[in-house]
Length: 103
Figure 1 (cartoon, one colour):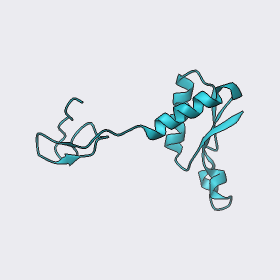
Figure 2 (cartoon, helix red, strand yellow):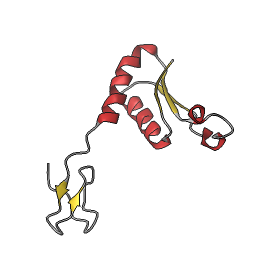
Figure 3 (cartoon, one colour):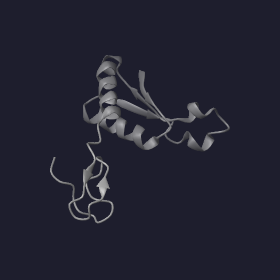
Figure 4 (cartoon, helix red, strand yellow):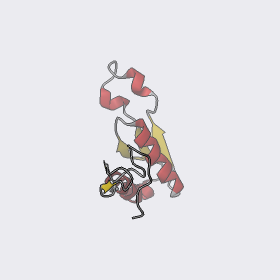
């Protein structure tokens, strides 16, 4: 068993765990509920961790984790409805709700 991811963000750790499982890589999410112990225990020991069950899956799992963490959000776009500049990761304008143009 090898650790492929550790961070303070339980949501991202849960997402990474789910993606690995969807790719057929058995994985374990550890420390999901240790956040309440932070301060009593060292912070980094309370962070959620994703481990792969089979060492043979480690390299593929690391590549998938890297892909998730490096996924581009897309380029910023200007809303055709109100003219606001919207960051690329959003599918709708934050100001008027109009959908992003097809990319």
